[in-house]
Amino acid sequence: MNLNDKKDGVALVLAKQHAIKQAKIKKRNKRRFISIIIFMILVISSYLYLTSNIARINYISITGNYYHDKTDIMKIANIKTNDYWLITYPGLIKTKLTSDPMINDAEILKANDRNLQINIKEKRLLAYLYTDKAYFITENGELLEMTESKQWLIQELPLLVGFTNEDIMSYVDALNTINDETRANITEIHHYTTSFDENMLKIIMIDGNKVYTSLSAISSVNNYFAIVKVLKVTNSCIYIDENSKTAYSSECPVNE
Image 1: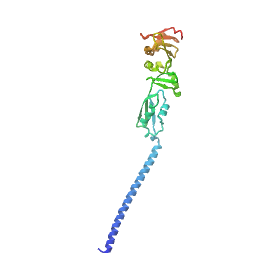
Image 2 (image 1 turned 90 degrees about the vertical axis):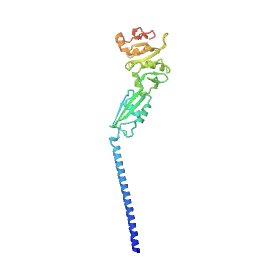
Image 3 (image 1 turned 60 degrees about the vertical axis):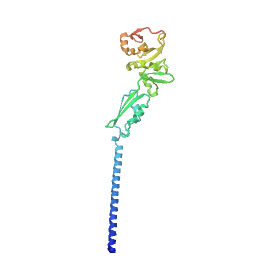
Image 4 (image 1 turned 90 degrees about the horizontal axis):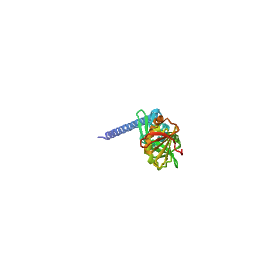
């Protein structure tokens, strides 16, 4: 093999190597270009999605609330109707809602139509009282400090008079027996002691009548409207017999 043939062979090898190198560069540039295109598409798509209504919560449905209105619930949960749907986390919302002292539990569902369903369970309030502060009393005997925003609830709850904070647990079961309709018509419940019973109750109704009953017979107050219809009395004193659970009208105590 002469020198020229060797030079031609080397040139051929170099040419092939160069061709392979160029092909690799071209392939790499093509992949890079495709990656850039895909990235740009993702950026543009994300921008269009995030700036459109389809990225936001469509509607927030709230049920089970009575003591809180919808605005209260959304404020406690720190959610808004224009929040992003994908980063709305039910577990986080539940944690925030149940941190409120008047909310027992919450269930949060994300529907496929971007609707957010919130069902809360509030603590049932039985009454309120003033001692060192103003408190609501829950069905479990818990004392919840009354906030200014919830003062409107006192128009639907009876005021407890003559009770201490320590007394409450002893009366919770009895207070729980009063149904909500009757409770809304009671303005005050007074505790007083007699020679034969240290746990007597005077219940002042919104119509002016006063009902006297023992702790064990308090459930009979749920029949109040039927009792008044039979007795046909106003601004009078009604007594409920502890044994028979029957009611009758009589003169009010001298100290009334």
